[in-house]
Image (cartoon, rainbow, N blue to C red; front, top):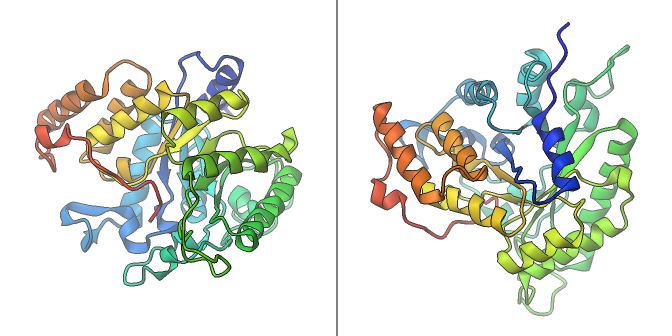
Length: 353
């Protein structure tokens, strides 16, 4: 059996921890949206309405994953447990790839985003996990007899804290239980921490005011939570909203072994995506996990090519937008926006919902 190539994630993490200014940047494609949005997670078929579809099938969604993994420009592919079973376990898609497969390990209630409801996202998040570590590793509730190395050894665990002691304690207890199981199973994880999703709606709060400084609230909770976690149980990197230049720099400088990554949030314009990577890297982030920004692209492989060029400082964001549009034209793919519109910067959501 051929030797599996070195995973770029592992090589880059080692270099970043040794020298945060080494220039390396980790890109992840978050193709786990079926654990949040249901039918609409796969994105609309070409020319269809983004809200009403018709949408791609799960097989078409997984084909995009295959193509991006074969392209080899992302370092991590995040999937639901069911997609990972099909691709990482059954097909062994990642066995000969430098891309690392990962599974979303919990689905807190604030990402239950079924169309026609909307109520879950407006209620304070509660902990919940559909899958288990063994299922992510092997596709079964218990490791199969004689199982050796699992197909997947990396998962995402997500926290949403709402400045409420009772609710936040439940969330952190769930994280503690996951860490204990992960350490026993030698299963690595990265930690996602969302902004408060409903800080004004928690039952125990006397007022409905959110935290006074939400960026510091999140950064301080990351530091406080991980201060009690020994090395064997710590996340390999973070996935958080971009907190702005000052707080991002402070968090990145606080502990060089705590590799800061940002999430993409809403799709926005192409310039939004490219500029977010450049700005976050300039202020200390070394990872970006983009789901909707990649999935909404007119041509995902071309988008990832240019995203990698920006992340590796080969193109500035505006030039990357222009080059991306030129490639779309060469491929005879109609862009959703004109070049001028796609060069604009627009407000985009930093929450899953």
